[in-house]
Structures are given as structure tokens and as C-alpha cells.
Amino acid sequence: MTDAARLQLSRMGTAVQESATLRQATRVAEARARGERVWNFTVGEPDFEIAPSVRDAAHRAIDAGHTKYTPTAGSFDLRERVAQYYSRRHGLEWGAREAMVSAGAKQVLWNALASLVDPGDEVILIAPYWTSYAAYVQLLGGVPRVVRPPVERDFKACGDDLRAALGPKTRAVLFNDPVNPTGAVYSEDELRDLFEPLLDRHVYILSDEIYENLVFEGEHCSVVQVYPQLRDRFVMASGASKTFAMTGWRMGFALGPEPLIGAMINLQSHMTGNPNSIAQRATHAALAIPDAALEPMRQHFRVRRDASLRILGQLPELRYTMPRGTFYVFVDVARFFGAWNGGKRIESSDALAEHLLGQHHVAVVSGHAFDYPDGVRVSFTLPVDELEEGLDVFVNALRQRA
Ligand code: PLP
Image (cartoon, rainbow, N blue to C red; front, side):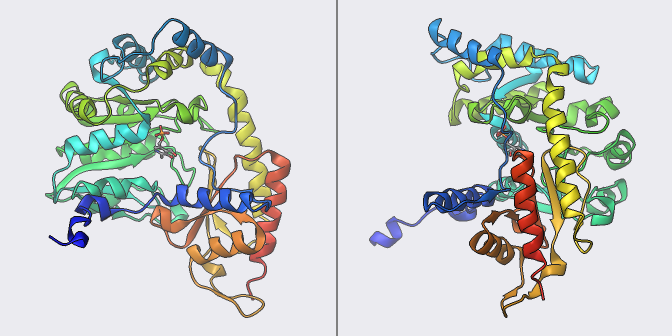
């Protein structure tokens, strides 16, 4: 065997590239290291501190020696706590054996898909969708079946879209609400219409609800609240990252039918074992934070959202959806492709994102990352004055389209 053959990577090792959002974040870090000032609209995490009760719980966990292995799915009392938290939110009884804890919602999604999808199985995705979904499906040899609702519908899918996409090989619908990257939030009626076609089909719903506590108007509603009869095929991914600003702690929650959760625990037992023991104790404290205490964070993001839309609204050709949740606005920039002042041509959102960063020090994520190449995602996680300054630069840069 030649050295080159020996060094060849596997199908899985070459199937995907680094996550585009993380790649753009690296470019920002490089620009800053060169001493450049960058308005960074790529960030996928709240800029808030964790609650003091969470910090204290972590310190206490170390002092009390909670630093050893725990059961793979998280300690049983934390699984109970997660189950109670969602029983209250959903108005349904969840038991501890229907809940588990993983290293972030990322691991929950992977565990769930790896437990459900065989090569050739189809998984329905709704574009634009979060960057890792298609990667998961492809790594497993599954086939993403992509539904593309129009911008006029805020990119929200409906029952007819799902009916058209369902086929004999459909294994699951990978659904996200509130949606990263569009900020869309489905109403109860929209959820009822969307999932009606699944009532008589044995297809799983993998519902990524990681932004469940970041809704600005009204309240988040889970699919399982609308159709409790689907709970034997419903699996939820959520976690502490966005709600409690605990992105670095890597705490994801899964809820689902016991046999599926059991398979996910088996996988996790070989992949990573238990999630971090100290973070588990901190998450106990986080889940005890009353809902009302999250309101100031929502207020901050609402103010930033409104400030962002005021500035984006200055350019009438710019099309975007009204974010009712998350901290992202997704802008359709196709009208800005073509010749720019100075003779440059920009023909894609990748090229636009590169131009904005290179020439204007404004970092956004290209829509390619979300399977919607005509868009860019803008995070509104900066303080309002910086946000306004940076978006002014963004809008003025777009005005240079000839
Ligand atoms: N799902 C969506 C839609 C996300 O935006 C993210 C993070 O950006 C995740 C899942 C992963 O979250 P976690 O930090 O819990 O792994």
C-alpha cells in the first residue's frame, strides 16, 4: 500500500466541511488579530453573562467533588428536572426516562438522527435551515429532501409543502422553531396545518427548539402541544446554550419516546459518555430560574431587533423577514448581485460576505451556509450603538451596487 493510499480519509471524514458559521467566525478572529476593527454580525450566542446562581452551583459542584463520571444520560435527578421543566411547559407528563442530557443540542440532534436514519432514508428539511442539519443527514448516508417555502411566507412551510415532500422513504422531518436563520416563529395554527399530514404516517418529527425562550411576540408553542397524539414519534432537541447564555457549557436536552431515548443513550455511551458533570450541576440551577427572569434578555433582543430593522428599512430594495424570535435577521440580497461601483462584480452571497468583510469590516454569514444562496444572515447580538453603526456601514456598502 502506498503512503498516499494509507493516508486516504474515509467517506465520513471527507463528507462535510467545517461549519460555515464557525469558519466565518475564524475569519473575524483573524482580522481582529491583524488589528482591524470588525462589526461582527456572525455571532450565534447571547452576549449576556450567566446567572450568579449558575456560577455558584458550578463552584459548589467542584468543591463538593462532583467531578467524576455520571450516568451516560446525565444524572437521574437532572433528567427528572428536565422532564419536569417540559411537563410544565407542554402541559404533558414527561418522565425522567423520556429525557436525557448531552453535550449540547448538537449532540442531541446527532444522537437522534443516528438512531433513526439508515442509508437511503429521506429526511425533510425546510430551507433556509441551520447549517449542520444537512451535514448530519449526509454523514449518515441519508438523503435531505428540501422544502423551499417562499420569502413572502416568511420561509414557513405549510401542510401542502409537507404532503408534496413525503414519500415512501421519508423517515423524519427535521423541524426548527423559532428558526435559525430567519427568526420566524410558527403559530399554533401554522403548526396544526404543517403537521396534519403526519397524523397518519409513521414519520418522526425531530423538533429543534433551542430558541424556545427567545420569542418576542406571543409565546413559543411546541408541535407536541398541538398534537400530543404524535408524542411517540416526537423528539425534541433543546438546551441551556441560548436560554441561559451557557453556550460554552455544552448542555443539550432531549425529550422523546423511551425506546428512542434508550438508543440515543447507547450511542452516547460509546461516543462521549456523560456530559460534563460540573455543567450538569450548574444546569440544575439554570432550570430553577423562573421564566419571568428571562424577560430582560428578551427585551434587550427586542430592542436590538427593532434597531436593526429601522436601519435595514432605509434600503427599500432589501427584502427580509420580520424576526419574531431568535437573534437573527435573514436578508435576501439577490438584488445586489451584478456590477458594483468601481467595476467589481459580485455574483453570490459568498462573494458579497467576503467583500463586506474585506472592504468594509462587516462580517455576516453567507446564505450558502443555510442552503439559501441568495441571502445573508445578520445576528443582532451587539450592543445597540455598535449594531446601528455596523448596520449603517452594511447598508451604505450595499448602496455601491451600480
Ligand atoms: N440548533 C440550532 C438551530 C442552533 O442555532 C444551534 C446553535 O447555534 C444549535 C442547534 C446547537 O446548540 P448547542 O449549543 O446546544 O449545541
